Length: 247
Image (cartoon, rainbow, N blue to C red; front, side, top):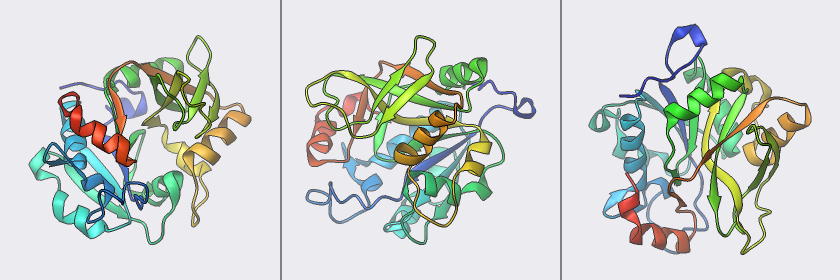
């Protein structure tokens, strides 16, 4: 089992927040009967694969940020015992966006935490990511993936050290390769203090650009591991064909 380095009270990072509250409107033409994280890949809900991966990487506690059809997710996951995890739910009364969902769950967070999208998978070492985060003193670290067609992803620009210079959500040029948001993050807890409460807030469109603008130290941890999201019918069908790359 991995042991994550961290300066917070000398303890390893054991908590991950999973963003699983989206409406899944783009995927609805092919997966209409369940929330997106429960879409099956190779006969197993995608969320189950993510939970298995988090356990294998040494995490012990998962907070599921849920909204749309959250009861279905609660019935499937329970308390997390099938994966050897302690799982709790943070339910959004209304859709709050990626950052708003994290803010809504802050009562479940005591120190630094990982966060990841519930509809993407990036093969990245969380242990190595935590080392990179601590050694450089980043406020937040974003795992980035190299793709050959960045048309439907958020392009990122980083310097040779790995500092995040710009974040342009959904502005990739079709057919152009680049580094994109891999949907895995590591945050210092004080990031939550910078997110407004009670309204929808986007990590990609609001929080990251604002932190860059004010000169905060944000890092990009580069991974060339397998990356996929299941947010569109095309990518969902691709995940079925490539499920051997998934946990």
